[in-house]
Image (cartoon, rainbow, N blue to C red; front, side, top):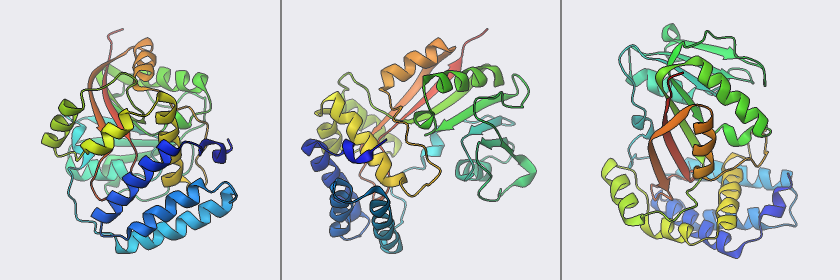
Length: 295
């Protein structure tokens, strides 16, 4: 995919400038750095490799001076685990989610799997296992062996709908009846949302969804919303050389339809919108909790 072709909407650029500058300012990082990031991304005269190098230099500088004081809840607290749960995290070579959840839940066991090698060490190796898997082949784990499965920002990087279908078939096989599937995606609802209710609900939970930024996003056309998500996701992940850019982004309505066809119903969802939390890297995320139908 030629990412330069995706940088063409003035509305998207203006909202990204607003989104980045406000969060950089809240993190006590120069707004000029935020503006520089967007200008580099938008410059069609710069080749992709040069863009990546320049963006990495800016982010390294921003990260050294950013105020990392937590002002928002840990979103992992939205994952509800029972005592003695067995969780599978798919696409988890860096182990961030597993290590953080293992620290919070001392009776839960974890399996992390990915098609690439394990990148970090487990903090709790007695309760954690890593499995390197092969794309489009059955995961060598026993049927119905997990009561929770987590897939965080993976599906839109799969090659095509056939791979997504296969992945969800494997999840259906591995998840116990009435087990929970947590899906994190860079996505949005096509239908107009009740912004007032969304903001109030999120803010009451400690999620710092911003009214003005989220409203501006909702006013974009669906084509522009896709572009915003793709461009923003590329900016914050361009340094990941192993990341495949397959452009398999979908609306949340479409994801729900796909999950339903594979035997999962949407029991809960969080539309995080655009958040003003002082993080210099963040997406526009949907988090869904799905329950596996009885066979």
